[in-house]
Image (cartoon, helix red, strand yellow):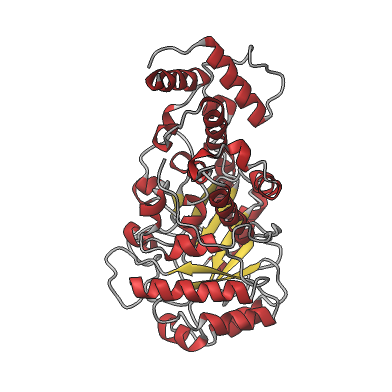
Length: 88
Length: 349
């Protein structure tokens, strides 16, 4: 998977911060390489909620089978960029 | 607007849906594992999943200190909800109390013959397999329902779990009526065949359809007593089992250890060991025939994404989750079902 557009990384970080109500971090300062499960503490239901917000914003459906691969903001952003490029 | 065009934000903009979503979302932190507490039981039911396989052959660990350490380690790895089951937890109340002291959210599955001390403030699931005549035949125990109702009279921990088999479908009416008269609650389970079982308790398309009718009737007639929803009925009486409909996410059927149940769920035997290859809430059940209530509580609940396609489907899913929480979490009050019709489960995304 190609590396992600930095705008997408920032926007995904914003979605995660908003959905998880994270404090003391902004989309710009969020480390896109943090492991979302081990280091941020999200679980499958959080990820499903985030996937739904992403679907709304980008029109990209995330396959349930792909959830386990989406371990960082950078990976999610690259996944979305790839899906958007496939649509063009 | 076609059914495919809804955004999630549109769906949760409906006030009743948003309110229910926010209500259930507070419980997304629940991470369960299950624990066999003893390898003994005072009854022997036909088709009991516990005595299938080799689970009952492992030694009991009756050491309170070991259990305390075990629960602390479980808490440490993120477990927030325990299910104490097999074979009969009421034989080891001190171990149950130890679990409760360490992890205060949980549930105990019991046959209800021996009462669990009040200080163990978990939800208690009392198994009922028909009226007392049928129980005697299948479970070889006299006056099961009568004894359960006496033991747990006025006890808000208790909820009866009626397991529908082909031979007790119509008896659910008299059992529900009795429980309603005593202000007690009931929810429904489906007999799910253990691996290799081909006896008369296994459901057929005809018995699934009859069960669906009786469940629907009881939900309508006893809305305060029956903790269930039309979508529960659909999911558990469908000709396809839960795995075919929703792709079971328990480790036994899910190799991924990255997130969700595949990562955190364990099913411990009485010796406090576990085996990933056997790990699900009802080990030794035939996965193709699994319509078990405990399995559905996790498997259907985990599939939020695929239900967020229309307000109708999402409402049905919320009803299911609301039911699951009311059945498993003591003190959680179920709301009125949002979706009164039986919607077909959505296909995998």
